[in-house]
Image (tube, one colour):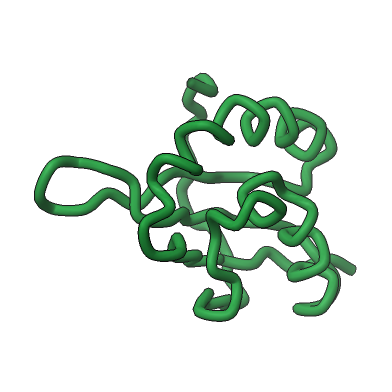
Length: 104
C-alpha cells in the first residue's frame, strides 16, 4: 500500500536560470502524475529577498522511500540538475487539509 511522503527538495546552487528554462517541461511532465494520484501537492520554496525559487515542496504517494526517490529522479528538475536530491528531506506524511488550486 502506498504512503504519502512530504518532500523538501532544495535546488542546487546557482540553478535559477536552469530552473526557469526547465519549468515548462517540468509542468508538462507532472500532469500524468497528478491525474494518476501520485503527485498530490507541489510548489516552489521562495527566498526571502526577491521571491526567486530555491527549491520545491511536494507530496508524493509511493510504497517505499526508494520508490519515491526513483520517481523524483525522473522529473525534469532532477534530470536537468536543478534539484539537489542528495540534500532533500523525505518524511512520511498524512495530509489533514488540502485545497485544490489550478496548475500555473
